Structure formats: structure tokens, C-alpha cells
Length: 246
Ligand SMILES: [Zn+2]
Image (tube, protein in one colour):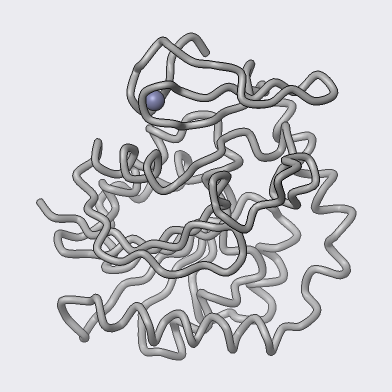
């Protein structure tokens, strides 16, 4: 990548170099990414391996996951402009815990997930929801008339190669006044280990985009998504709610 995909600035410095992985930092907006970015095929390969290794342990602590999901939904409720006929979408829905919690909240609930194992788990356990197997692009191709009141996307965007297209599609799928709940690691969080490679969210090439408070705002602003709430994160992460304002 020759320029910053958030602000188009062509001026960037090396932020960190370790075992052949070079992170660069945009001088304008502070966005950090793995340069060169991985190829799409490599990401898919790494992703499949990661899931195969963790699949058995992943769906333990189900009750805890549902409890946390319900708590987050109660929190999001305050930022909704209406409370009836709410359509909820989770991008990167894993085992479907958040989707199920949203359904129990009375919402019409959909999950998008690329990992077939997770989608099967979700369909088997929480079958009163809609689960789509694939990425956001393929979902949008066949559901481009749909609109959602809440789009939830937790720990996904750090894996992407093209974050602009991703946010563009989110904006398309979001109702006017709809809310977008987003989390991603924060590389400039005060609690991030000083030694970058000791940070659990440092995992190139799996995590190839690294945001901070400023760069995430730069990204969302481009698509007229306004940050209306920043939550305090004790883990080095960003947790925000943005709103479709136009
Ligand atoms: Zn930039």
C-alpha cells in the first residue's frame, strides 16, 4: 500500500519492525498498518487454521458470553431512536451469542460469519435467528435492500485488508438514525504493553490494521458516521457507538 487508506496521505514512518513484519504509521492521521498488507488467500488460510485450533475451547463459557451480550444490548438501547421493530445485525457473529441475546431482547436478529463451524454451532443452538455464512461483501450482494437499526461489529476490522469498503457497506445497511457498535484493539491505549510484541492484540498478519482514537474517528467521519459515545475500555481497546446522521 503506497498511501494511507484512511486519509490518502503518502507520508508514513516505520512504527515497528519484528521478525519480518513491518508496521508503518501515517504521519497525518496516525493509522498503523502492516506493510505490505497480506494477500486475501493468506488471510483465509490463517483464519481457518486459527479456528481449527481453538474451535473446541471457543464455545465454552457460553453462559458468560450470553450474559455479557445482554448487558451490552441494555446499554445500546439508550442510544436507539425507536424501540419497536428493531432489526439487529452482528458482523462476525461467531457462535451466535450476541444474535441470540438480541432476539431475547425482542429484536429481529441476523448474524454474518465466515467460519462454517461457528455458523453451524449458531444454527444448531439458536435457530430462531438468521445466520449467513460468508463475508459482508457476499451478504450485501444478495441483501442490499435490507436496513438495520443496530449493527454490531466486535473485533473484526483489525483483520481486514480493505476497511473502506467494509464501512461503506455498513453505512449502506444502517437505517437513518441507526447505531453502529464497534470494538477493535487500540494500539495507543495507555495500558498497552510498552513492548509492542508482548501485546496480545499484536498478531500480524492476522491483525493487519491497528487503530487508535484518532484514526477510528477519521475512518468513520469519511462515511458520515458520527461517534456519539466512547466507552472506557480497561483492556487496550476502542469501544464506541457511532450514528448514521444523514
Ligand atoms: Zn492517514
